Amino acid sequence: MAEPPCIEIQHLNHRYKSSQENTLNNISLNIKNNDVFGLLGPNGAGKTTLISILCGIIPATSGDITYYQDGEPISESERRNIIGFVPQEYAFYQELTPRQNLDYFGAMYNLSKTKLKSRREELLDVLGLTKAADKKVGTFSGGMKRRVNLAIGIIHEPEILFLDEPTVGVDVQSKNAIIRYLQEINRLGTTIIYTSHHMSEAEEFCKNIALIDHGKVIADGELTGLKAKHEVPSLQSLFIKMTGEEYRD
Image (cartoon, rainbow, N blue to C red; front, side):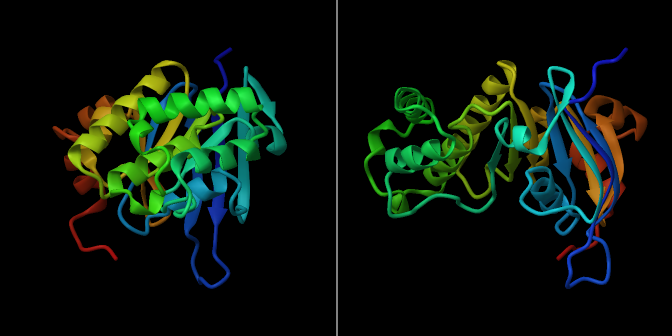
């Protein structure tokens, strides 16, 4: 029998109360353990809504989501302990330092003082924040703020990590450092679900993808196979071929 996926999404729909149309329409996807899975699509396609539902931030209108751990389905309360979320918006306290932010959010995950201190100092080091660890985050550059955002999202060492545009608006050096670190934690076993508008970055980073447009999955599978199937040389070419070239709001 085949191993169950890490996350199984079946016939998921969502409609905001203020809308006349669904934001998501009959989404069904399987995400494998230890995958780097790209949720890609134009502006307004429904990517952030889907991630918000998967993280339990907003409810689905209908459909089912099942999380698996060691091959067995787990409850909603159990899934909260194994997921991490790094949103596109900054999710920290600007007036606090990186150390203070990590202490605050680490305590929310009930990490012991010993574990929290060890994990905090490890992340400050590997994300290049040690020298600025006691300065207010509000004074940081965009790249440094992105790294603080990432550190907070992974302070509890989640098994599944959701990333919504983790490198938007940062310099090349910060982007490369962030991607290298994400590749390392994936190599060590973390499953990553990722959105981005940087097609070259996504092509290098992702193993499998789903292209979403107008709230529907229009293609999903292993990236190399999708490029061969649609006879295109790159993810960007695939993206344009599947979603068109018109302007999006």
